[in-house]
Length: 322
Ligand code: DP6
Image (cartoon, rainbow, N blue to C red):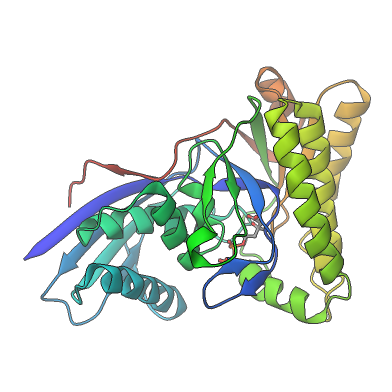
């Protein structure tokens, strides 16, 4: 007997970053964070539960993966099996339009799609809040890709209260400026752990980011896009300063990233509302008003390859053809 379900999820870009865990086993973050789910780079995942399988199987873009990626998915499926009281193994087939490992948060769309598809395939009917909590266990930022548009992920005081939900926000666009598509030098998971262990600035980051999140939620509710952008750029540059202060140091920003940051400053000097944010990689995302996005993308064409993104849907089930 087999049961299957297919889900689609999109990456999200944080405007207040998640960088640090207070409980790695439960994937509880040191602070809350806020992001926009994109309408580009979908991940599509089909989960087929099969009593005939001796072990879980993972396929990414038609290639069978073993080792760490399979272990991470199998551990995640164990959580779903425990909730469902069903110990059958599953085949997970994913197609990913996100440049994997380039700092565009492919684990966010990946685990959000997996949470939605696996819970349905195992017969669970979870609320959006419980899906967000489940996705969080796969990858912290995946908790936010369950949500459409702008999401706030509450740090919470435990597993029950650490989930993402929609929050009021101005209409915005993001220009994804890709300067490099190669694998990043160190995963965000490992870099986050090294930051907490070795950076003398980590306690300041945790207290500052908690306060920043409150200001960001207020700026979003006030529909003040300029203030949202300013808070986001400051928070992202503080995260990169923090990461660079590890021992041994980690640096994701390259000369090509800085060239985009310079351009964004120049756009602002010319009166365009544009602010930068950068995840754990060299690529820059420019936050702007929807009406300016195409012009900003065109102005960056000589320093990056650009894609304009708008707020996208949360992870959801789709018709499956398994
Ligand atoms: C820089 O969610 O990938 O993108 O919870 O260890 O899987 P794990 O980390 P992950 O980290 C994302 C870090 C970030 C900032 C953000 O998305 O908030």
